[in-house]
Length: 342
Image (tube, rainbow, N blue to C red; front, side):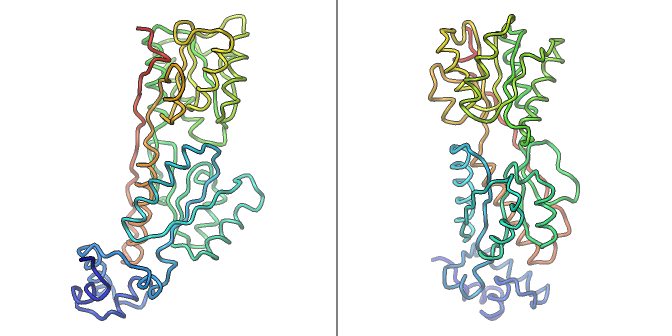
């Protein structure tokens, strides 16, 4: 049988009302009693039902995911990972798409937090990388977790989950070099995403490690879109000296580049190798399938949600001065026919 608020109270040796106060984070429970109740909740794997949430205050069991990202596959995987962790811990999820460039973005997010009485937020790029948004949340005392591109978190900063785009981009570029390529192009996404910067740094570092030049004309600025891939490959293939391989900042760009190359009669990979990033369905639905870096977006989202819930529990227990270590994901190289000459 599932644990109930009554069984939690009996296990902790307190009243049902005391359990309700702990769940509601009322701040009127003594620290030792609070610890006993939280231990009972964890031991019995108690998941508050709707009635318990109503008794305790529903705001403590609703998390928000705020995002600005046009990639539908990324958003679907993010929602899947967050929902899995929310359901496992008795939380509901409010999903809020927005325009991060809006002048009213801070008021929009804070208004949503207030109106929905959210316990905390999951933030993905670019919102997780916007200091003005984070400062406003800190000032209001809103708990949040950030999904960031990087390998090391700031000490004593808010909890975060990191994606080591640099290392994965290095591995992709090194794979292209090992296939015999010396002239390699790079198609970037928006620079407002730190993932773009980190992936380009990894690309440049791999070239430098093998004493290969980085041709400025081979680097094309763009957006994370299919159209950028099509337009960029047109530019690269009309240069006097063209690359023999292209690393696109994500699979959607790479799929567009592959489409543009095939429209011009270019053989992939015999004449031009193309690699992407993320291992989205785009990478598997093209012909030939794309070499990429497998980014486990659903696992990243689930870990971020788990980290946020851990932070919320720590605040209830009054022991949240100890920072929660950041978890680092390194996307893994997946070699497919779009770069494999053998």
